[in-house]
Every structure is written in C-alpha cells, then in structure tokens.
Image (cartoon, rainbow, N blue to C red):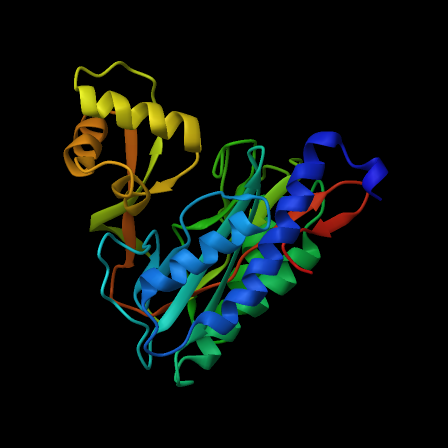
Length: 298
C-alpha cells in the first residue's frame, strides 16, 4: 500500500497515524478538575514527543462554543461536571496534516444522544466518501443522520480539503445538502459533522486566542518584526496559539494586536452557537489513494 502512495502523502499518512495515537491517549486525560491548560500542554507535548508538530493549537471548546477555543495565557479553567467538551487536534509532518476531533461529556450523560449524533453522522459520511461524489451528497447524509436523532447540524461549518501548510482551503464539505454539485476529487480532506440542540448556526465570539500568518507585508514595529520572524520560522501559515507566543515574548499582546491590525495575521474568534445550544463535533481525515484510508483512526 505505502509503495503506491504519492511521496507527499506519506507524510500525511504518518501525521494521521500520530494524530490517532494522540487522540486515543488524550481521551483518558480529560477528567473533572483537570486544568484545561495542563491538558493542552500534555496533548501538544505528546505530539512533539512522537516526532511531529501540532498542526494547530489543540481546540478545547466547551458547551455552546463549537470551535476555536484553546488554553489561554494563565488559564485557570478546569474541566467541570456536565461540560460538553470538543477536542479538535491536528498533527503535521512537513506541512501535511492529520486533523481529527471528538466530543466527551464530563461526569454525566445528559447529552449522550447529541454526542452520538455527530459521531454517527461522521461514520456514515466517511463510509460514503469516494472520488467523484458530489459534496452535497455528503452533506445530505450528515444532515439526515443528525436530524434523524432530533438535532440540527451546524449549517455554517463543515469539512475541508487539507493541503500542505494549509488546514482549510478551496471549498467546504457541508453538513447539509447545499446544492453544491462540485465533485470530490481532492485526495486529502476532513469530514467534520457538528450537531446541536440549538438552531444550527454559529457566530463569532468577542475573543480570539488562535492566529495564523496570512500576509508578508512589512511592519515598522521592532518587536512585531521579531514576533513575525518567529512565527514565519516556527509555524509557516499554520495556526498558532497566543500562549505559544507569550512563552517567547514579554510584549506579545501589542505585537499580536499590531500584526492583526495590519492584516499580517488573522485572528480566529471563538465560534458560538447563536441560540446558546450545546454543540458536539466529530472529525476524521481521509486519504483517497488507490484505496480509502481514514488516516486518523488506528
């Protein structure tokens, strides 16, 4: 099998396998009373221990937050009973990415059916995925499963292709039939169902703790230039956490604010379900080569 895989996708396959290992291990680390910052460090350090790098900061999104939250600088939050926790983690090797997500509920099972809905949708959608399938058909399957369980998908979120040093790009693999007749031809992509007991749309929150480099424009600020040089060298165009920069630079806040204001960095605001609905999420990366490989499952 490996001999028939294009050399560039061998890195994607290996990244996916490491992602799967970290995903499986990390499930045991989510416990009531554990500091969210400790969990994030453990996940990201495990990726590095396995000779890879985080493709983005591990997303740890609670309850009505669907995505883009992560541990913050001096974060004192802990996992608490009843939290519905989305863990979205990624690994890259030479820019080729494995991207996966799962949801757990802390010390209760009030939202068990909601969590199962997004997982069932993922399993059915990834089984149907093949070269040439219309994107709308994947969305139809996801919507059908989630609505059949009595919930809504998140209509304005979805899966995505994965390219070198680019986590999202080109198009969306929808969570409903959006009438997009585009056919799936890209070999590496992620399917990402979200389910909610809310109306099914997310809005931008007021805070952002994750950034990525989007432009190479010059900046006058000396500290901003130093931060930008570090970002370019360490992360290329992949997302990074504010807390990662804070470990290296005392004046990280004004530097990030200036670089974002100049359009050099993009900030990812937390994504909140508009009606306050609880959200669950599951995700896997798929490689369509001579055969279909779900890279983020062992």
